[in-house]
Length: 358
Ligand SMILES: Nc1ncnc2c1ncn2[C@@H]1O[C@H](COP(=O)(O)OP(=O)(O)OP(=O)(O)O)[C@@H](O)[C@H]1O
Ligand SMILES: [Mg+2]
Image 1: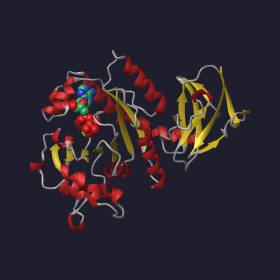
Image 2: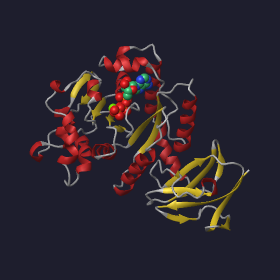
Image 3: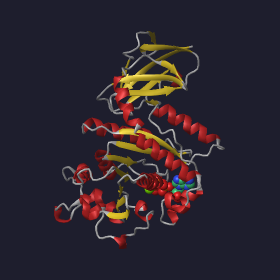
Image 4: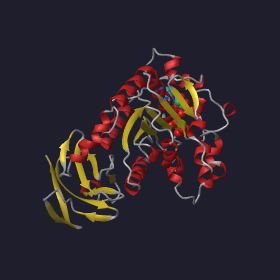
């Protein structure tokens, strides 16, 4: 059972559209799919024409059972089509944070509920709300993979560091392993911004992004309005083609192997790669790693590195002009030389690592 959370605290970036259409495409290929709506807005439920009058129990009852008595997970499942089921959501879910305040194991409720399914599904897709609270924590702890939709917009990458940091904290503190992959949505190749954001996503996520970009397509919007996935609404459009391609990529599970590949990697001194210079730092217990240097005026928080696979390898590609650059890593607030780089020289702030970009 592959459990995939679709998350990003940025609103309107395509989480629900991806959850609905990826689920429908997988089901069309006869994969047994359970879609879980864990957003109090209930958009994934509405996207299948399911409204609160259609069900008695929802994800709320799994996370917050009345009198503390767990109910069987299957009691909350609604069949949607032959291969697709749904656990719906309703607005009362927004009270979960208060209801479970201080309760032990509150972050593990969804994980426990899913273990009750005994691998009955090939895929479980979780549509998260647009914030990083208890609901997203539950999704991340239940899942082994996360898809982060990133829409082409000016604030697309804002807050991404926080989301990745949260995933890392979960991996570290809860001994969990969540593989994260970015998905570019609302892509329009006529816009210059599209290439800019795509370049940024590649820089941030290295290999951990889907080759498929979801293009802007009005049919996707219309389909949700009609309470249908694109597979049932209209199949002669880019929206259908893109979600089918994404589904193929997910099923190939290519990116599942990337973690294993990355685990073999050791941190190395900065090296030139496509798009800039790749910096890497190894720490399995750091909560944040930043790169500071003469190229960003030694600002301590200008260039966050990302530990995308949760394996302790923090990396980032930074575009740098040719020349000699001095730098240090800021690890949980402490400044460190690059242990993988033997070259250093003294500067204003003491000894610094040095890299020459040719
Ligand atoms: N590729 C696309 N082309 C055109 N419209 C899209 C596309 N993806 C999403 N939309 C539209 O953008 C709006 C927001 O999408 P969606 O609801 O999937 O985002 P979300 O991240 O789930 O939002 P929220 O954060 O509120 O949960 C919707 O009206 C949806 O129909
Ligand atoms: Mg949504």
